[in-house]
Every structure is written in structure tokens, then in C-alpha cells.
Image (cartoon, rainbow, N blue to C red; front, top):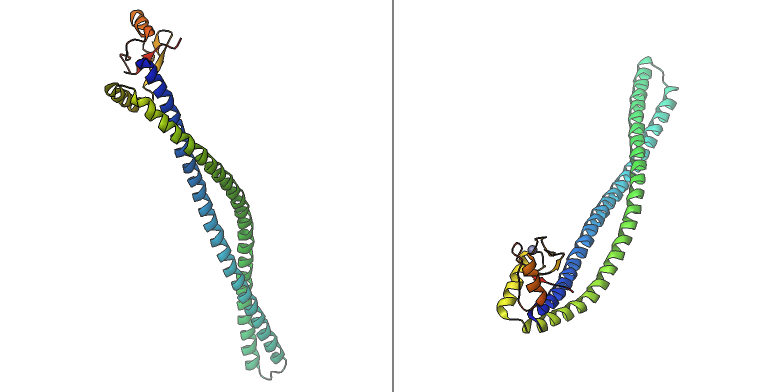
Length: 233
Ligand SMILES: [Zn+2]
């Protein structure tokens, strides 16, 4: 087999391997990003639910407190009808006023808690819906990734074997050059001549060189990007 044809075939295998590796590198990153989003949403929902429990307890306490105050006020009002002195009367009304103020404070606190509860419940509902769709998305991507990995693992080992078989027949110094160029040039070390230009970098190849390359008997590297050039019918 002509040396350049061997390199063309090796390049075809390497390109497939590169695509496969990119695919395998990219998908897990996307899944990781989704997983992080999911985690932070789960944390936010947990935090919200904990706060909701606190609010429920505080509301309960506030209602007990209000009931207590009301009871005290009622009791004092009953006593009010039984007092005999102005002094006693003043003392009782003063205490009732004080308790009414405490009642106002408690009612205000109760209202604020109710408002926070409502806002939090709406927020939690929205977050839980987001979480549901995100989890579903994550599950689909994970399934897809697992399928791809399984398919790709087979394909990859086949390609690696094929690469090894092809490499054996190539002169080691040429192979070394190929690998250096491939690694330096985005994985592409062998390119066609297209309309008398290197299809790797666009450099116009002189006509006499093109006819040499066309014969495929000599290896020729682009003067600008160093890639191996070949003529594809
Ligand atoms: Zn070039």
C-alpha cells in the first residue's frame, strides 16, 4: 500500500476516535451541570420546607398567645363590673389597655407570619415543579449517556485495534511526524488538495507540486501548516 494511503486511512480512524472522545467528554459535563442545578434546587426546597415548619409552629404559638390574652381581657372585663373604687377601676382599665396593645402586637405578628407562609408556599410550588422537570431532563440525559457510553466503548476499542494494525505498517519516523502534526493541528494531519490549495490552511500549492502529489509516490507536507497533502481523485 502506498505510504500516503496508509496515512489517509490512519487519519480516518483518528478522526473517528477524536469525535468519539469529544462526545464522551461533553455529555458527562452537561449531565454534571444539570445535577448541580438539581442539587441546589433540592437544597432550596428543603430550606423552604424547614422554614414552613417553623412558621407553622410560630403561628400555632401566636394563636395560643392571642387566645390567652383574650381570656385575660374577658376576665378583667368581668371584674370591672364588680369594682368598688376608682383606684381599682383605673388599675383594671390600665391592665386591659396593656393587654389590648399586646393583642395588637400578636395579631400583627400573626398576619406577618401568614403572609410569609403564603409567599413561601407559592415559591415552593414553583420550585418543586422546576425540580420535577429538571429531574426528568436529567434522567433522559443520563439514559442517553449510558447508551452512548455502551455503544461508544465497543466502537472505541474496535477503532483502537484498527489504529494499531494500521500503524504497524507505517514507517516509525513518518508515524512520529504524523502524530506531532496531528496533535499540533487540531487532530488533522492529513488533508486533501482542493482546487490546488491545501484544504487544511488554504495555502495555494504550486502546479508542479500538485502533479507530484497526484502521483502519490512521495509524501508531501504543506509549506505553511505542515499537514500531509494528498490528492483525492
Ligand atoms: Zn496547509
